[in-house]
Length: 301
Image (cartoon, rainbow, N blue to C red):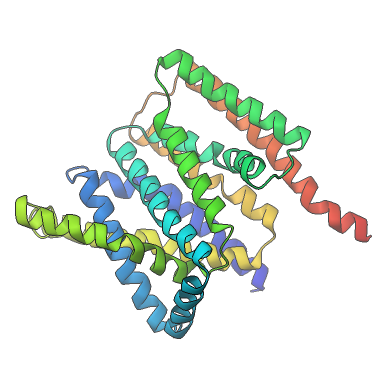
């Protein structure tokens, strides 16, 4: 199997696993979102650091830490990014277990467009006419829901902006995905451990107290976080960027299907119109992205 085929398989599998994640969180409905996110941080750190040691990259991890400490700008950017991704994880877990799965789908559909806007604002990147049109359609979809529901889509925009700003910060730092996750979770580990100490001292945590399956599911949150990320890192290294762009819509599409057909969340006429605007935006955005990526090749020819 060629490197590109392996990359395609790894990237596709990563996004399929991310798309199936709501099914996992739903098994933990009887556990508070606070404890789930705490478990996710702790066990992600444990699992990824074991993995780094097993693949004999612990020396590279130490080098990464030294590099970050020397470059304080990168250090604090990653520190901020680690808390932003925690916010993103928390919103997603809370939304899934409070019957807002479809809203999470919209959040990840519009995330690439939010990332483009953040690039324009903070990195002074130029917006093409096609990208501007895509953003207008996406905004239209969000406004339809705001007007129809009479409430602000905190889940969708919270996910899109937290992940968009996280990506913006990570763009400033060149770091291996797996080793980066070790460092990110290490930054937020004190907060997570502090919360677990509080739970064991004052309350009764689900971990080790409800049943063995719940405990194993909480421990498994580390694998749910780390495995897709490792697969994505393998995929991103071996396939063209435009393919990564297309693959990223697998997860929200699966999430939308799960929310609608598995858990029976409402998807009526209003939702269809709003999502249609988002899908049109994605089509325009995707074609514009592919065209931009192919320009250098055309110039060479």
